[in-house]
Length: 277
Image 1 (cartoon, rainbow, N blue to C red):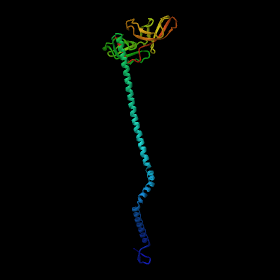
Image 2 (tube, rainbow, N blue to C red; image 1 turned 60 degrees about the vertical axis):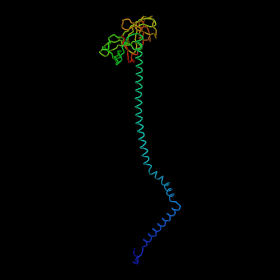
Image 3 (cartoon, rainbow, N blue to C red; image 1 turned 120 degrees about the vertical axis):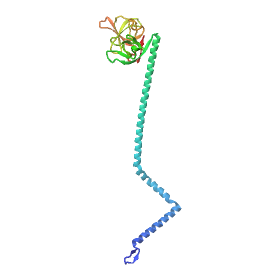
Image 4 (cartoon, one colour; image 1 turned 45 degrees about the horizontal axis):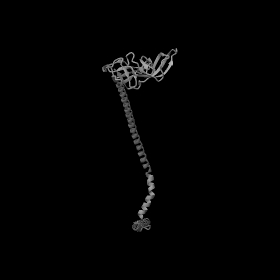
């Protein structure tokens, strides 16, 4: 209720306009409700509106989705790296085990050859394992895990499955030192298995090589001949393989023949040796 310009009571223009608009909204709402009840067009309108608004929703939610995708991708990469690390460790461990098994197979093969050689020659022997080598470039010696307590003595011949290795020169309670045939101080009586020529084989001290100096210039020795222990001197039994002739030439004077030979024993590779009794 408001006063008119002349002071009499009545509805103001503003108040009357608001009432008309309210009545119009109510009529429109009622009409829409009746149309929706009869034709059900409002759900279709809502569906169409949702289709129009859906891209906006997706665009608004894209940053969050991108962040989640990136987080999951990084997590997957970290998981893959960890799994790859575990697989590499497992592969390395498997390769180490395979290498160890192969080494054991080779060692068993060497032991079998040693025992077969001793049985074939009808000789008694004692197995020993190589536990150290002399790194001096001018000496060729190894240490084995058998000593005085196991009956090892100085001068005892040492062989592997392929040939003569050397002899014992020092004995300790549980270890012994073996002088290899290639040591400069080593000398071994040998004979040529083909021609029967006898000689002394000396260690060269450099590389796996033996030298037979001062042979007669016309000695019947050829490249490829096999040299055997002759048994002279009583140190080594006769008939053991020692070396193969690799080269021969006259010495400086031209009066003698110098012969080079390669040891047959695996001096740098054998893990086990046989001490002959």
